[in-house]
Length: 466
Image (cartoon, rainbow, N blue to C red; front, side, top):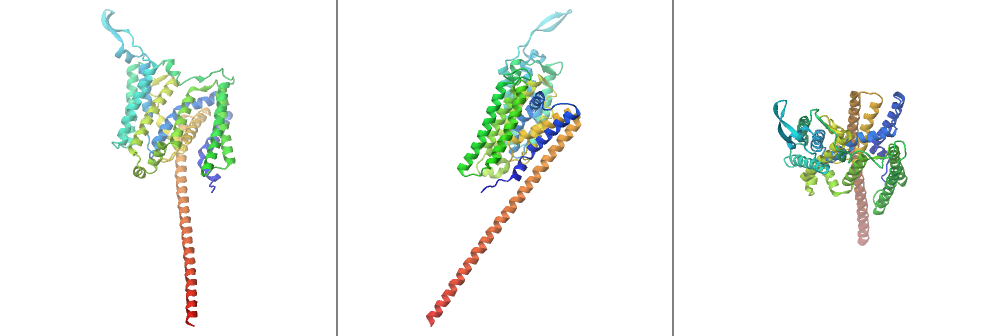
């Protein structure tokens, strides 16, 4: 039975359609009002790089929300704290010198003072990265334990982290530098998250970038058609061939658009490779693995998942441990891009990640959501940010627009859920009516058979009596 419905397809992709419409709208407005070309390669690259943290944090927030609509309010503050720790150990600064520098008493202007005679050497980049990951693992383990096993509500536990880590990060930066910021990060650290692959001069087509884009587009087409073929072979429902072709063509168009933009802007940004790696890994986890299904099940019905043998507490623990690790990666990406760690880093990051998930169709109640949806939601928020900035709107109007989009996404989810429940109830009623009609039909046939048998028996008895 073919259950394909174009109406259902449009409902599932309403935010992707909205993203396309809003992007085209801002392209036209920016050109008409400010004479700015939003399709310029540098502008497109900037859009992706500026929203890198949204995609990274959004992947972790998705896993938390799948467990029952749970969120992590501490990610923005932890980005600030992690950036401060990375700066503390990778750059020469006052606090590092106080701890590990060599001091001697010397006479200065006739007064004996303690003088720094040998500054502390910054730690090597691999050690700094291990320290950052270690702090993330420690915090994630503590947070996951408190939420999963001590049963502290997630919003309370993470709100405590939101307050504490903003204060800790600010204190570290204040003690480490007279400017309350740490800059001049070593290139060995920033180069891991910044720069471009096979970089070429601006405007000159980057051939390796184009080849990688073509390979990626071909891989998408191959995977889509192979998936359809495997579904048919196994007897599962599969989308019509024409729809798979159209869907593949749209994805290929997006890939090639970004490929050309990156190629003309000097090459693929290194941060894009980080984003792709994280999104592919978490896409596979949520769609293809048992643990991904466990996350969905816990969020959909925690009691049923427990009775089926799933360790709900472990799933919750892993969700927040994972969130902390991704937060460290986001902190490294942001710190490398800006070239500095300061007390304002990470502000409202948690709200952007949550908004990306909600706008992207991740259920606020848990049990439903995809990485692709989160990417669409995050990109939509990013387009609104960039588009309104380019047309000259101030930050207040940008926040109003993002709030309205978020509200519209939640309303759409609730109404869609109600319509699905209503359709499910109607289908159940139809099934019950059909079942009842079948039972009535069977009963009528049985009565007719009984009447026929009784008539035959009466006739036979009358004949025997004669």
